Image (tube, rainbow, N blue to C red):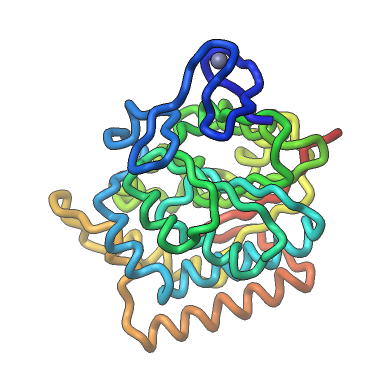
Length: 290
Ligand SMILES: [Zn+2]
C-alpha cells in the first residue's frame, strides 16, 4: 500500500492526498515530489551529467552490459513478479531496458534529482515516476521487486535505505542491487562521482542481510576488465579541476565493441553458474523473507 510520509496512514487517493492528515506531496514538472527540498540541490549526484549520460548510455558497452545482466537476473529469479520499483533511476536507461524486456511488469521509478525524471519519462512514458528520497519511501509491502543500480554508494545512510526497501517490498519480494566494488579501486573518479564508498563483497552482503534479507545470489561482474580498470584508475593523470567523470565512458567504436564482447563472454559464464570473486562491480539478489 501507499503510505503518508507525514502520518503513516494509508493513501487511497490517486493524487497522493492523505485523507487522515491532509498532507499532499508537492508537484515538480508534474511529478509527485516527496523530498522537494532535495530535488535540485543534493550532494548525492551531480545532475549536470544527466544530459550527456542520456546521449551516451544507449551506445556504451558498460551500460549495455549491465542492462543485459540485470534483465537476465530479473527473468531468472523473478519471473512471476508484477510490481517493480527502481530507486535512483537517473535518466531511465535501465528502466527502458526493463520496460522492453518485461512487458508484464507495472513500472515505478524514483529519483532524488528532479532533473532526471523528464529524461526517464521520455524513455518510458508508461512508468509511474516519483521524486523521492530513498531514506523515506512512501510505500509499505507494495512491490514484488526493488532495484537499485549503482545508487547505494552515493548514500551515507545505506543501511537506512535498505531498511526502507525491505518495508516497501511484499513478503517474498526481491531486491536487486549493483554497487561499485573494491576499496583498492577507489580513485579520484569515485570522489568526483560523489561516491561515499566502494563496497567490499562481504560488506554489502552484511548490510543487505542486516536489513532482514536473505541473499539468493552474489557475484562480481566487470571481472575480466579488472586489470584494465586498475590501469585506467591508477595511471590516469587526473586534473583536480574540471575532472570529467564521463571521460572513461567515451571510448572509440572499436574499443567499445571489444569491451562489449569481453563482457558478453563474462555474462555467459555467469548465466552458466560461474560466480566471480573480484570485479569492478557486484550484483546481489536477495529476498524479503515472508
Ligand atoms: Zn497523512
